[in-house]
Image 1 (cartoon, rainbow, N blue to C red):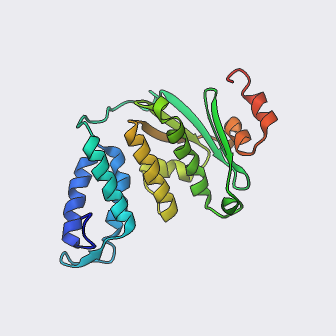
Image 2 (cartoon, rainbow, N blue to C red):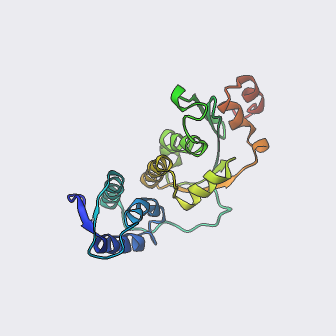
Image 3 (tube, rainbow, N blue to C red):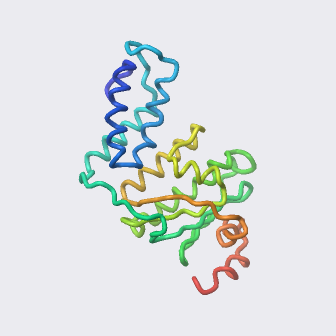
Length: 218
C-alpha cells in the first residue's frame, strides 16, 4: 500500500484485520491504526476506491519500521501499582511547559505563535510528554512509566492512544513511536493541580517557587 495512491475498501479492511491482530501483542500499535480506520468513512461498498492520505502513509511507514526491528517477544503484563517512574508534567497556555521526575527537570517557553490560544490545550498538555520520552528515553528504556497530568482529557487520550484533533493525533503518533523504540510501558493518571506544584512552577517560569518546592531533590 505504500506504493499506491488508491486502494479498495476491502484491501483496507483486510490490512486493518491483520494490524488489529498484531495489536494484541503490540498494544501501542492501536495509535497507528486510527487514521487507516478513518479512511473508510463514507465508503459503503468493498469495491469502492479510497485515496491514500499522507497521515495514513505515515502510520504504515511506522508499522514497517517497527516490525523490521521487533524481536517478536510480547510486551510484559504488569500490575498498575508497579511503576518504575512517575513523571509529572504541566503546560501553561500563556507561558510554556514543565517536566519533573525525581530531581530531573525540563522547562521551556512556547513559541509566540503557540501562546494564548495559538494551539489547543490538549496539544500543549501532550507536547511535554513527547519531550520527556525524547530527552530521557535512554534512561527510561525498559521501564514502566506513569505520566501524572492535570488535564483529564489528555489522560484519557494517552490511555486510549488516540485523539480526534488532527494535530494532537500526530503528536500522539510521535509519542507512541518513541515509547515503542525504547520499550517504555506507559500509562497516564490525573493529578489535581494543587498536587502538581513543581511542574506548575516550571511551566510558569516561577524559579524561586520551583527551587523552594524541589529542595532536597536537586
